Image 1: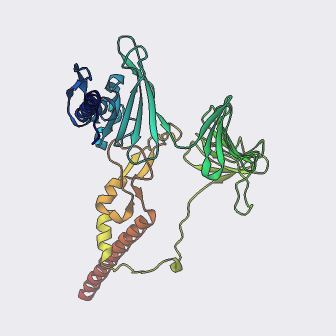
Image 2: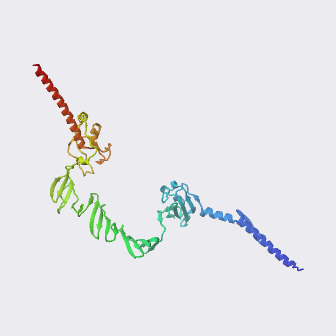
Image 3: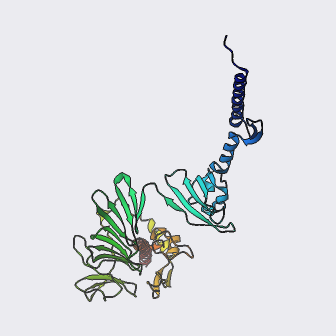
Length: 416
């Protein structure tokens, strides 16, 4: 039977004891909580944090902070770095310095520049594939000044010299921006697709060298065809065409200004006169003034019903209540339409109470803007019809009186 020496047996025993101690120490570190006592090989001890305590410390300080609630994001600085979440869109308001009114997640990273409060904030809306970025610069006293939120859209963004390029990887195109122009560039064909010049001149090219929109300092906008030809001007006076306005090339015109100063070159123009009339001019000659005419052909109408004779007396009663008045029309359009001379006529509001068929429109309340499109207006054809019925009723009454007089005369003659 083989035997070992006492010395070898003691050495093996010592090795097994150290292995057992190692296993016990590892069990404390990985399965225990808080701080545990670790025993060294020489029998001395020391306190050590367990794995659970270290992980809890890591999660508590950076990985997960919890809900933002109603906190102002300006107050969540570098001293509170970590991951936050905002589950309520109602809480994500611009007043609390959110980049948009949307629930989402916030990541705060301290940069410790000047103060631990200095940080970078990144906000992720819950329903969009974009994120927002801003930096908070801290002073030595801990005060933080935040910059504006900037949206970051997924996709490669590069910068070369003074030109930035935003790539659309799926279509192999990019938007380029430099100190003078914006535009799109096709990488495959190596051609610029469009140019936009919002900084120098305020011009937008719809197709380079072909068509553009340009704005001017006088608040006007011009549509330009080719490199120099302006075809349409839009400004505070309206829309101005310096060539022609035609229906199948049938008309040529210039902007009317109330006189014939711009009507030259065998062109016509219309202008509002101070006498509240629309004047028509051809070249330098005044042709006359425009009047409206309504159509009344039977073939244009349906459901025709002639008014009965008994309605004549009703119409007569209404017309006898119509009140005439003298008045002036107020100035309108910031003085472009001046106050009128004294007129003789009717007040539509009065007629609507007596003969509503003779009045159109919804009417203006006291203090409303002087908008003719909403004001009451008189239906002159209906008024003529109403007065015709009243005259017919009077004619009927006159005939009845005449017949009565004739009967009385006949009776007097028969008694003589």
